[in-house]
Image (cartoon, rainbow, N blue to C red):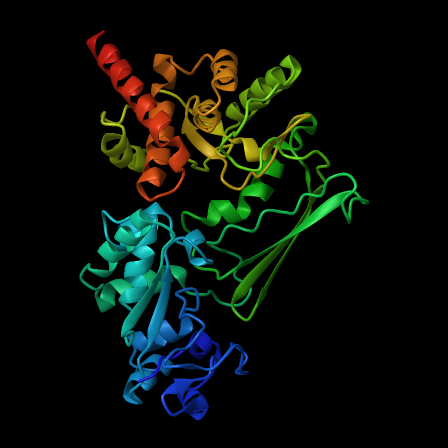
Length: 418
């Protein structure tokens, strides 16, 4: 028995693969059909990826390379990386709930790969013990039905040529600072690539920068202006090029979690508060946070009922320290939209929890924190990050987040008694 690499998804036929088999070994065959790497007995590099939808759709109809591989006596090993690759950007919590309610997006991705017709083995990549347990739990789930797989591929499959929609978040444009190569000129070009699907919850990520330009402009210089956008579709893959004003200032932290206290001038804090107030006042139908998520996540991770939202405002929704510069620029606008009042303040507060002096400054600048009006936003952000901790991410914040959740529970009890 030998394994079949992802080259099947790029047009390589089973017969060609068999031509590379020598004895008990298999040459690692790349997407172009050429050999790469070393010959390893009984193994094949190059994972089967759910991003390459064509062989999976064919397999659901009993056609294509996956059934052919099984008919030739080959084992098909699918690689299901829990948090890496392109697929994480295509499956958010809403799509995970469609796949199987109760699973995280990462688990839903693993289960979908494991359920593909013709797949005999799943190779799991996990960076920590919690990730491994999640992956193992997902693989142990009953396989998805053919009907459910058809529904999923209907969401993720490529559109007709020229259909400009996508589910994958474009890569962050590269920011060049003073003295770095390419520092001259007026803009930075970012190119996004996606395997498009029908419009859905992640469409907002693809159009976020363009929508933000229409809604906010450059926010008096506090948001890098989007200068031009060009879209094209080639062979079922959508591409977008975005030309933005260059930001010369480095970000305040290379990690979203602030690793050291910052000494920022009062004018910087005043400018940030004023900019977020302007953002909050803009009307939009884009959603950064959904009530359905709050109703599920807040009870599970914070231990209080989801609160009724009396005031929804517009939020940047990704305002951590790796998206801020001094002088003030607020970067990365892909995910902006409606959220509970105070959501941006709660985001910045959460990513500052390791630095007591700066976190005190955040509380002072944003009085909504600690108030009844901000309770829903704080509970939402706390739940979101505790959920990542449960997956093995942001572990440095685990204890501060638990302490925050205890504070939120006390405040909820107090507010309920009034």
